[in-house]
Length: 248
Length: 248
DNA sequence: TCAAAAGTGTTGGCCCTACACCCATGC
DNA sequence: GCATGGGTGTAGGGCCAACACTTTTGA
Image (cartoon, each protein chain N blue to C red):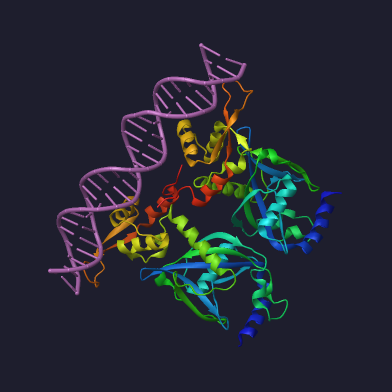
């Protein structure tokens, strides 16, 4: 089916299923190959890329809607999700489907609830659906042109992520189950946008007492094989409750 | 007119004017008499109190809607407003107008955008409108029963305020133009929920270099008359941009 | 043998806390 | 004179950044 027909068909269903005027956009962060990635979608016959998004079912909880949207897009469950703000500017969405029939669902004014998600890169299988050409991880330093205000949403999400790092050990959701200390440090450096001192980082992480050191090492690279670690779920959760630190 | 008729009349206008399913609730903080206050509204023939709230005009910006709602309720302009999260649970609002006609505007599912506002207590003239009995400041330690999930919204707002205090000198928006150092300290102590050391507080505040000391004192009390201070607008704004401090 | 990983020691600085002092001042 | 406000001194602790040294280990 043509994109145009797909959209028009979707429009009718959407009117029945979803609350009008409210959309959900997700900034999905992943970490791979020592780089921070964001999951983006390219719709058919549209040049720019977009954040994965969707709508809120009439009887659906907001967080469940976001989970559903990500499940469809990544195949992954139990994704760490954080609502961070609304994007509501007049005109941010209305013009995007110009040329399509009036009264099309997509041509409403939409107020978008911005979520950011932290996922284990290896658990994600990007899904290309009927209306999209591509669904891919993009490096945070190589984000292509995005539709509407999605670039703003992405930037705001990154800001929030950075702030959250101050009092939550975020790595838990972004890294694979086991990882090395240099990998963890690299992740922090990328999110914060600056270098950290190795020795001090090591000590600080160990002081949180939320890592279990495994007996194995990561063989295969040149040089010494680094130790493997795993987050200790219990102590991690407990640390989060206490809140790692805060001023005043 | 009876409340019932007023609501039904309002319902028709609302369908024309506002985006459906989206509401705005504001937690308005004020400081008076060494106490933190929240502005609450009591609707006619409803026992519980409510946060001031309203809806988003079809062509209106979200922040402007919040400003308009507060302007109507307080008479004050230029109120410091901060969006902090959505409250979207299914059933949070639908049941509230049971007994009213089906299809009433107010009986929709509403997703509420939570704002908190910081206002100068003395600039506010609480407004009782047609559907309300009362509009009053309530002490943060003496909040009456609230409708729906408004208590949760209030608590969340307070949490956000406390967090923001860590990197913004919030007093600017809550205090009158001139104030004394003990008043400022008291405000901080209430928001943080704990005592602070006087000498250290004094030094820290002065170190921010955002206060102008006036030549006057506050006469009239027993004991020594305290000095008066005023926020230095320029340096205050500049300090906010730099961000007072943050971890990592 | 080389380069990376791991672990630890040390230093100095900064900031914060707690306490304490002294002076000023209004009644 | 007494209680409060204003301003400053200081000792101690915690934390952190920077640097450095050592040992381990895989190819």
